[in-house]
Image (cartoon, rainbow, N blue to C red; front, side, top):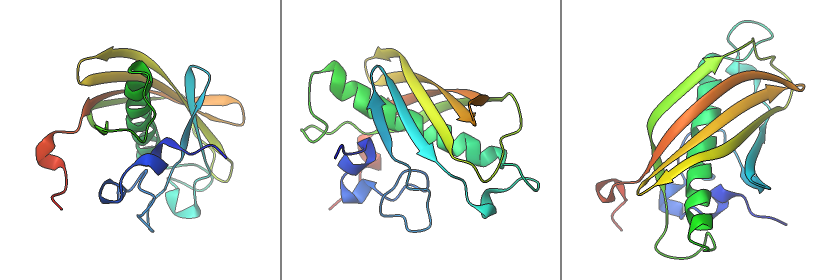
Length: 156
């Protein structure tokens, strides 16, 4: 069984609300390679509602954000021809997030978030992403991710 990008994150960096596998209250998204694209599937819960029947826009931004930073990490490893469990570890944080909401996103259905790397330059990775529901693109985004500064790393 293929491991998700987020499954490679060390425990001390696995508490993010969007992608942290150790955050019991979080989304715990899982992202995988699908050829040259990345894919995350997630079904929002009733508490992610904006108005009855539709997903809250901040939730959509969170999904695109964490999908983008996970894609950035995986892309950095791929660019160096390394496995994701090798050191030094690549971990990314968001420097910029842009989301365009194209149509209302229905609640109660599985969402598919896809991404593609636009640029890798030094410590920066730019990822374009789109969120679909029932085959319709509901939002598009761009994540500028940068390697996590050392001062943010937990001290053991």
